[in-house]
Length: 294
Image (cartoon, rainbow, N blue to C red; front, side):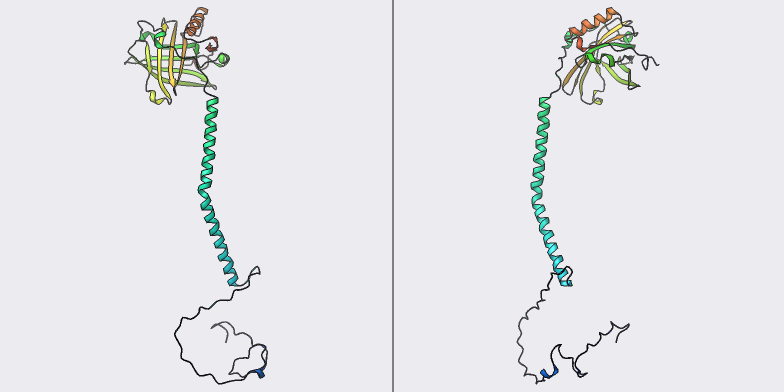
């Protein structure tokens, strides 16, 4: 009986008439071929391990197949995937080693390129004892605003002449006889302010850069006033070591923007005494922007 208590009963197949108390005959076997015989005598049952039932292997050639076919295909796919993952994990270290090998070749090539194209060779800085030092230096008279009208150094080039504009440097004397130094220069149409501290050394007129650890890569920085009359001009020598490379420069200060021929020749002569040539001497272009603003 079908309905809410279970699935509907299957429809009866058409076939030879059978008794209601007996199951239908197997399909394709006539009723005349079947006779009923008495059951044989029962034999004693011996305890033994029963053979496991084997499920017949279904034919899985069709795309869909039965649930057993689908189960077998899923199991085969898992086995294949597991084998692939084992192969990938086995090849992983080899691939990593190959990648590291190529990385090593790349770094080696970069080092060889640097060896072929080293940093430009600079004129060595002169010893400090060859650089004059202003006798009886008066730090209170040296302070104030200076215009930078000439620069020369082993990192400067003559072709920068038209691009190098004039700037100012102001020395403000503190109670401990150090200077607060502020340079104002025009860069990209903006006024840049560069502030640092010069600390006096044991020699009057010679200074060291204060708080040098703030300046990455700078190992030493020395400032030495070579010549000045305090009111008209000053020639100052700078030497710094940056990332094991030694740079030096000298600047010509003026209280005004005017550069006289006598001071020009004096500065050129001093720069050449340091080992520099005409290719390393620049006279900045005078400007008004930034440097004249208070």
